[in-house]
Image (cartoon, rainbow, N blue to C red; front, side, top):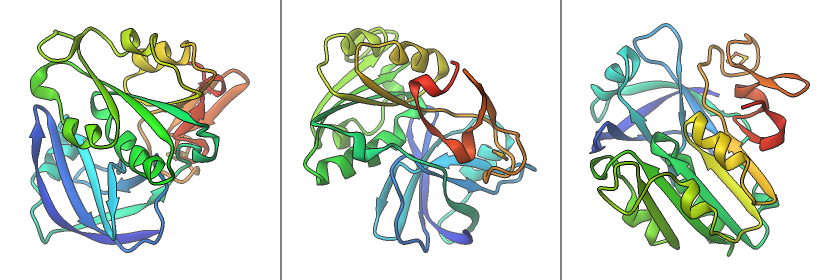
Amino acid sequence: MRQFATVLSNHPIAKGAMEMKVSVDTNEIAPGTFFHVKTSELLRRPLSVANVEGNVVTFLYKVIGAGTTDLAARRAGDKLDVLGPLGNGFPLQQAGKRVVLVGGGIGVPPLYYTRRVLAARGIETVAILGFDTKASIFYEDAFRELGETIITTVDGTYGEKGFVTGPLAQVDADVLFSCGPEPMLKAVAASHIEERYISIENRMGCGIGACFACVYQAPDGYVKVCSDGPVFRAEEVTL
Ligand code: FES
């Protein structure tokens, strides 16, 4: 659904990370889905849903180009042209008794909303969140309020030094939900957790399965990230 959301707030929350809250007119938003947001660039930009409270949706994004620089300049009261919610999110019905959530950098946001929904359903979760450095960390307290949370930093300035795969090797869970950079997804896809679901980030055009801009290699051909995903079983894509 296309609509004009109203920006409520938009500010930095950590090194390289912005938090934008908008009000949208939508009933139900599944964890792991995204909105396709119009910026000054030709192509819209997919932004995952970091949280939903009533009709307020939170996006977290990194300023890395003209489109996100434009987003960072939006102020409260501005209108934002959005399509969504789009895509297929994390399969909460597969969640089992204990879920491990593994996020890296700007892949962390969709796991927060996912964790909130799982907690409301009484499902235990453990979160492992990886960042480059202490200054890049966001939402730590919010995650801790919902259960066990392990933070890693690559440079060791906070939490456990290294990558998320270190603590993941020690975790016992039935299902894994993950979002983050491709090398991290590749590592978690090879982990010992029996059922593994990963959210793929890719450039997009239409966002609704019509243009093939977002195709991603799969063992038996390709998948469209926007409409087949962005969440896939680890075995469904070739990382
Ligand atoms: Fe057009 Fe996915 S973005 S098919």
